Image 1 (cartoon, rainbow, N blue to C red):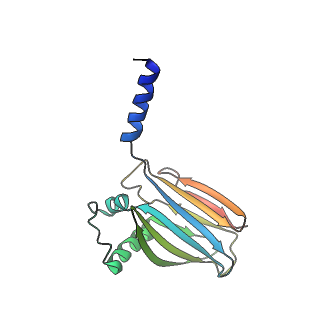
Image 2: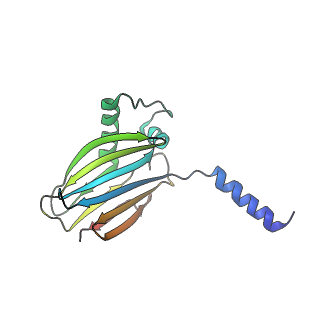
Image 3: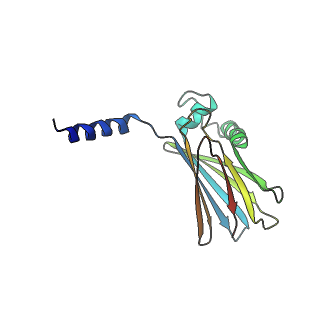
Length: 159
């Protein structure tokens, strides 16, 4: 067999057995409410593992209990704060869509902050190769960050 074909097939095989671990967080600024609206997407099986559950063991139909579990998890693994002052985070709740859990948080910005800090350590306890993508949008301004196990903090400048 051609060595190039052998290398290509080996590469394809490695891609199929290697699982990628990623979450995404979208932070949108709403001029109407003067809040930052956050939506966090995590694969449910990865989240359940990091919470200490077996896959599909977490009962999403028991909304109140599951919401409390995820909310407490986020409070420990997703920090959003500012050196300029305290931010009020309102944990709105979650929805399950196919393989994803989408959690919604609203961040109140009463003093027109110039910047805030995002620390995203979601799933790092279970997956050292986890990547957490942060996308910030404010009108036409867009900025993205990738958080890793060794680099989990970003400063977001508000335009």
